[in-house]
Length: 400
Image (cartoon, rainbow, N blue to C red; front, side, top):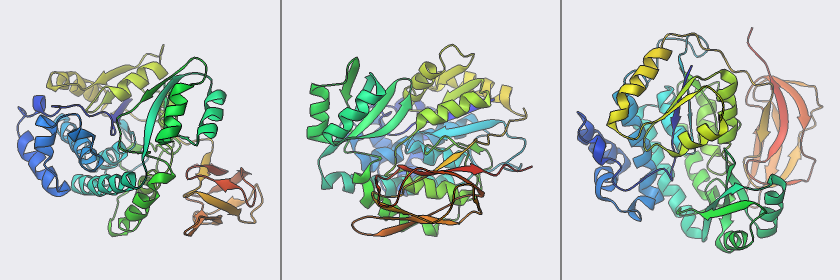
């Protein structure tokens, strides 16, 4: 089984488009993608310096467009395929953060045009949210998880990306990040990241609201390939669910570690990271150390032949389905939770109300996204929760 990994913001490098422009149609593709994104992606990806490609508003569509172009060049990946979402699949796809929009396009949920356009809106909205409060992110490598959690609470920070391979990216106010670097947990190394703000935290709430207000105009298709979500590493069952998760992930932690665990459980034998490649391939190699999995980072056109060989080897093989033992219902916003009066063990049809979360500005209802059984409440009435915090566990129903 083959995994395709789509990178997110932070993977970009100055001049990263240049080696790909010799491929037929490359220049016109990026001019067209730039027109959709209302940004000069071609110039940004060839002559833009490190500061220019740090700009969230334009970097996100650049990264997604680059991944989609190379996937198209590989052949056979983008767009819907002629089988059902549950049989005959030959590839499993997952992305990291904004890479989830790339993954959604490759799984047939969104068109290439819709993915680039939505990414551009997301990037601009997140850039505006970043400008409201000085915040940032740092990677924490190694150390004891409990000690790190205590340090984050002490400094008003949050775990934004749980990446696997011993890496956690934390986010929050700049003074809190500076304090964490000055006094890191034992055996941990703190590396500040060159990003515009605290992505995947409550600081991005204005961006999430903006996206939530426009995605109703999209008509997503159900995934035609196995598509894993950053929310919990689980397979996404419908286009509507995929779109909902793309919105909620703006303020929720990225659990790429859970995606890597699911890929290992599925028995993946090879993985290809789309450009700008390197970061996710490195995480996968560390997380799967000792496993017989070939991990290929598509660093340049010279790697295309090997990538095509891996795709050809996987094509047509029957693919196991991933049905998680349980799924987590998470809070959509920061606020005070009021769980519904639903006893544990109750069968819940999709859409069953599970309560609400009251923030300072709004009251957001929470419901079951799929048929299942309420396994366990994880909160009590009146608990304060952050966006992305778990509220309940469900045992999903598995089709016969």
